Image (cartoon, rainbow, N blue to C red):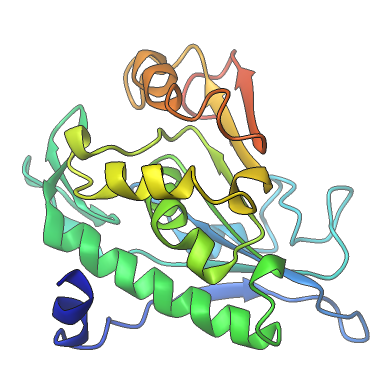
Length: 237
């Protein structure tokens, strides 16, 4: 039914995306599609002024052959009145749950379309295409990864200061998708890396994160949870 509904929906709105490809003469070996956080700006991730050491940029952390693709979220008015770049409308201020499921669904469809294009650039090698994100972008990307990672054959996931989505937080249908994901013997062995701030008490609270990870713990061999503290939520500063 869901597939039929999606088939009858208008095409997803193309996302504006910035990219950093391997230097001329270097072979394109893999791609990371990375979603920025709430209020973020994808252009900052590829700016020459960026000093965050991302692996798709020149520098000591550069990964040869990696193409970084950074889509830009649309602007959305939030319940408290602010209009910001966001992957979905929140339930409320200081609350990470979904307030408008259609906004999440639209973002999901647009990111999926982008992923399919990037896999095509890799000659259909989904295992060389990776997905990830920061904060809100991490959670939305993980929602997509749990639902569609196995069918696309994605190579893995890397995210920072997000949480594992659930139906209870408004990500309708992801609990069932997770159960199916856990039954995939190939996908569960692929890297699923999460960086979590244990001293984040407000933006994406550690108590929320550690509870959300429990369904994966001990059941996903590829799971790696890197716990950090000292900067709170702003681990990219």
